[in-house]
Image 1 (spheres, rainbow, N blue to C red):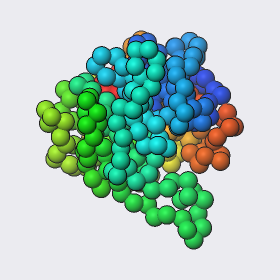
Image 2 (cartoon, rainbow, N blue to C red):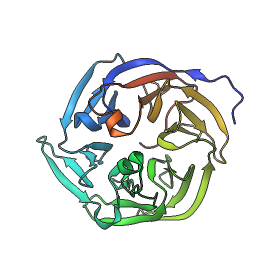
Image 3 (cartoon, one colour):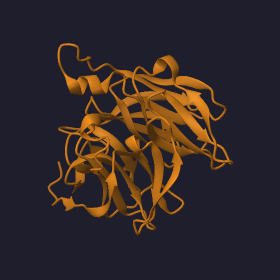
Length: 293
């Protein structure tokens, strides 16, 4: 674990319901807000605008090589594509591989989307009681640019934030209920192989994440009020304290050295939806962002 003094994030914007999927794109921070049913973007000065409305709960974001936006629609377990006229169409359905709400996504340089899902009814788990579901593993799903859907990898304990290294040959995904980051080699056709533990994390429930230029990963800790910078092997090199639950992060700004952290009081819908208590906080870090998303 890191012995360095942690950084403390500063306020950036507030009034979110529950933000997810932050991406730095064309000089703005884009993110989804589950319970506003919309995708927003914000510039470095904090000026926010709505980019599109999504009937379901939007989550992961990414762009095809031709610039069209992909957005995960959680509750109907689809990925939507925004056409040049602004309309949303179905890009791919996760089908039987998604045994819970669709969630985060990374889109590679060739336009292949890797999409996670909860694997079980998370809200029922929060509610507890005799009928609470067990935590069950699920699949990471790949959607090719032509809409072909396939299983990318099975048996993942809540596949969540995912990064792809700059050469496109390594994908690392957070397993929120496994407390680890898991690596795969990426073949030319998008097939994943060589599964291995990239970092086992004590006391961290990995959520949204982003990669930096030294090959370390900033990971939002859904089990704590922090984002941690992790090296391969699991050493925590740096941390940013966020003041409340931290569920996603992204390196952005003109020099890609501002870490934006999306926070909320809880990921339990009754404790987040309609309350407007979500925020984005920010902290300056030493190493700029790299890779995807």
